[in-house]
Amino acid sequence: MRIAIFQVDAFTNVRFKGNPAAVCLLDEWISDDLMQHIAAENNLSETAFFIKTKEGFHIRWFTPVTEVDLCGHATLATAAVIFEKLDYKLDKILFQSKSGMLTVGRREDDYILNFPTDKITQTETDPSLHEALGIAPLKSFKGREDFLLIYENEQQIRDLTPDFNKLAAITQRGVIVSAPGNEFDFVSRFFAPAVGIEEDPVTGSAHTSLTPYWAEELGKESLTAKQLSQREGMLRCTHKGDRTEIAGKVAFYLEGIIQV
Image (cartoon, rainbow, N blue to C red; front, top):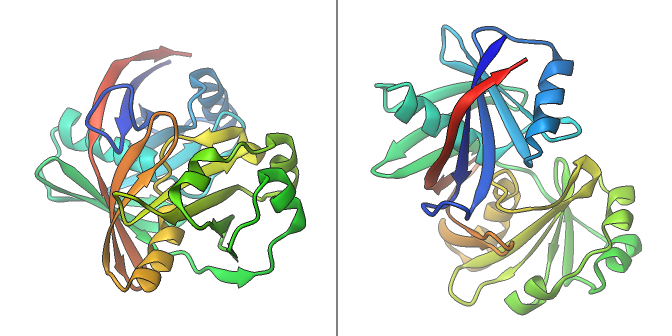
C-alpha cells in the first residue's frame, strides 16, 4: 500500500519553526492499528489522516501513542495541503471529526480554524500540579481535556521546567500554562506527557481554552498569542462565543510516499 504524506510546519511561515505535523491522504480508512503505527514511526506530536466525503473531508489525529479528539496545528496543516497541493477551489473546508464539524478558511496567506470554544471552570490548584511545575499559579481552571494555569508574567512561563513523569500521572491530556505577554496579548506553553508529548511546540486546540479566558480578562475579542516553545509559533485568536477562530501561517517541508 502506498500513502501520500506531507510534513508541514504550522503556525509559522519559517521552516523549522512552529509545530510540524504529518498529513496522510487516504482513499479510504485503514485500520486504527496501522494509523497508530504510522504516527509512531513519524514521531511527531501529531499525524493527521483524512479522506474525502460528500460533505467535505473526515479527519482523525494520532500522537505517537494514542488517538486524540482535537488537534489544531495538524488541522491547519491538513487544510494547507488540501488548498495548495490538491488545488481545492472553495473558500472553506469542512472537516467531520470526533469534536464535531470543523471549518478552515483562508485569507491571503493565513489559514483560519473555526473550532468549538472550550468551557473552562475555575478550580483549586491541584498540589500535585504545583509540585510537578515548581511554581504555584495565580489561578487554575479545568477544561474539556486540559488544565489551564494562569501565571503572573511571561518570564515565569519561559522559566518553567516541569517534572514530566509527575505531570503524566495527573493529567488526562495536558497542562496549559499562560500569562500576559510582553509583546503579545498572552503567551503560553503546553505539556502533554500523558499522550506521549512532553512539550508541544504550538497547540491550536489549547487556544480554544486560552482565547475565552484572555478575551474576558483583557476585554478584547481579537487577540495576538505566542507559544513559547523552543520552535515558537504565532497565532491570532478571535473569541466568537461558542466558537473560536485561530489563524496562522504554514511552511511546507516534505512531500513523499509511505509504503506499508
